[in-house]
Image 1: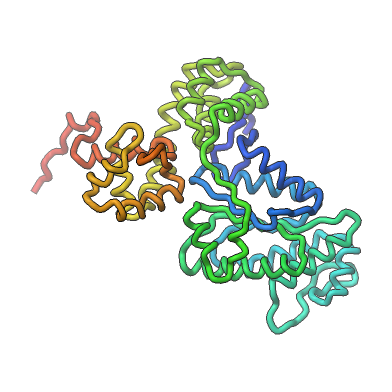
Image 2: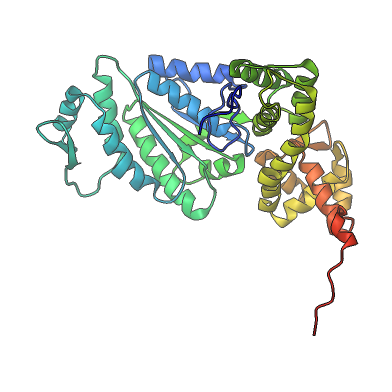
Length: 398
C-alpha cells in the first residue's frame, strides 16, 4: 500500500533488534573494534562482553560490530544463547559460510581434510571424524582467510546470554571451544551480550576463565548531549525539522534510555502527520504514550523478573522520590545491613540501581521507581478511577 501524500516513514526504530538510523554513544569503542577488523591487531579484543539494561542498545551494538566486520571481509557467525547453539553454528551457519567463500579458499579447505566439496566447489558434507569440534572448524577457516589476498578473521556474536544452569553448560562448552581456537592462533573475536549478572555467571563457569580477561562494555544511558544528537539527527535525516521546545521535551522525558529515545522520536514523528516540522504539541502527545509503552513492555517485565527479595529492596527505594539512603532501606525492610548489601550488589550488577554518593542509591532504569509506586498505590486500593464506577453490574438473575 503506498504511503499517503506528503508522509515520510519514521526514521526511528523502536522495534526489537532493529538498527537505529543514528547510533548514540560508544563511538570510541566501536572505532577501536573496527580497527581490529581492518588490521587483525587484536590487543585486548579477542573476547568482548557487552552488558546493560534491557533496551540499552546491546543488540544494536552487535549489529554495528557485525556491519564493520563484514565490510572488512570477515566471516560473521551471529546467534543467540538459546538451546542448540553449538549444533546450529556447526551444522547450519558454518556450512552456509563455506558456500560464500571463493573457489581458491574452498580449495585450501579441501586440503585441510575437514569438509567435502563437489567438482564445482559446492559444499557437500563434513568428512567423517570421531567427534567434530568447533575449534577445528574455526582454526581451518581462520587459516584459509589468513592466506587470502585480503587477510581477515571470524567474528562470533552471541546475544541474550542467560544464567540458567542448562544454558550455562552449553555456553561454557561453546566458549571453551572458541578459547582453544584462539590459543591455536585463530583470528577470532567473540562477543557475548546480556545482562551483567548473567554474563558474570558465564565468566564464573569452570571452563571460561579466559573470559575473565575480556574487554567489557557497559551499556547504560546516553548522555543528554548524545540523546539530543540521536533525536535531532534522526529527524534531520528523515527529512523534517523539530522545534527547540519539542526537542527539549523529548530529550528530557526519554532520559537517555535508548529504547525510550527511539520510542519517543517515533511517536512524535507519527503524531506530526505530514507536517514538515515536529512541534511541541507532537512531543507532548508522544510523552504519555511513550512512557506507558515502556512501562508495559520493559519496566513491568523487569520488575516481575526480580526475585522476591530484590522486589522488596526496590519497593523500599521507591518510597523516596529521589535517591534513597541505605539506612532507610534497611529500616524499611527490617533486616540487617549485611543482608541488604547482598541485594544492593546484585541490583547494581543488573543495572537497575546505582550508587549515588556514600550510603545512597538511586534507580538507573528510568521510571522504575514511578512504576513501583503506581503498582503499590493500586494494591492499596487507591487505583485510578474510571467511568465504570458509575455503572455497576446488575445482579445476576437466579
